[in-house]
Length: 364
Ligand code: PMP
Image 1 (cartoon, rainbow, N blue to C red):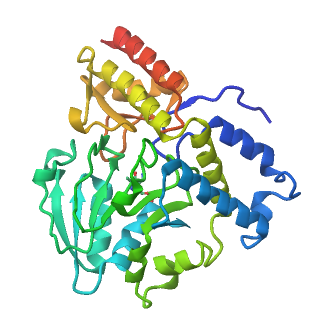
Image 2 (cartoon, rainbow, N blue to C red):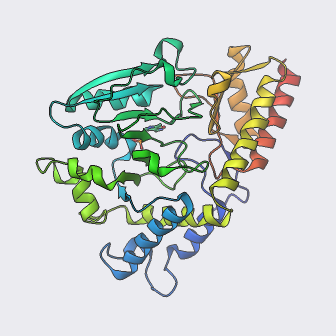
Image 3 (spheres, rainbow, N blue to C red):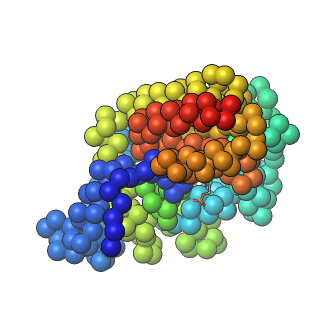
């Protein structure tokens, strides 16, 4: 079978690029884990070997992201989309109300699920502006009696990101951080719940990280479907049923990689550098233009258009030919998007900038 000797630069929005050392370690250990004689995919989720895999993944994540004891770490399934349902099912009591801040399609999907569980309120929305920005605190209408406030920290499709998350006082802040979790230092104690589908900054798809303040577990009603009950999942150490064992294993390797890179400070600085280089090129001549408003620009998903939008297809196609893959924007937003998550290398950003200059020279 032919093998690709050179990996290309993968700008996919997710599932997305993983750190090469993680892939190589997983490849080495795929046939059998050292000292175990079996693949991680072949061992019981209740074996002592897997106990160690899961404990390691959790401990490393806690260490690298500073997740305090006040919060439980859950490895669930169903993607971030299932959290759109689980959050209100668990946290919204009968007769209660929840606030949703809508800064993109994922927030809209989240509130649509919450409506099925109870009463919701839109605390603010940038839909009328094409979701080109996030909101300022003074633009939000927050209900001090709300059961929680839900936000999307990074809007993958539009390329916007909160610099400062809303202050919600005593109301628990619930965040969908699927596309920027652990992209910079984070104060987990600010969140009631923070969750993310695995497939961007954490590992493969099929494992969902949920970090929840332990006192909120008491809100989960026994009448909930067992698998959708946070308290049950926490009491069973994410193993009420068979979890995504392979996904948890990879997530543990990614957490170790984050540590070995120097932690979230170092990763955050590198992410800022990568995004700055790319936005500088977008802003340089007017041939390209950024989609998001400047003070809302995402460091993870850089969205842009060409002055001549008819050239965008050609751009994506020719870029792919040069080994720059996945630059076509989301189907609902159009344009171009470079997703540059934690594992995306700086050399790939430099290669894209080179390509952008050459494309402008030949098509400008
Ligand atoms: N929220 C955000 C911010 C996302 O980017 C995505 C997926 N791209 C989702 C939710 C949905 O995630 P999943 O496919 O894991 O359900």
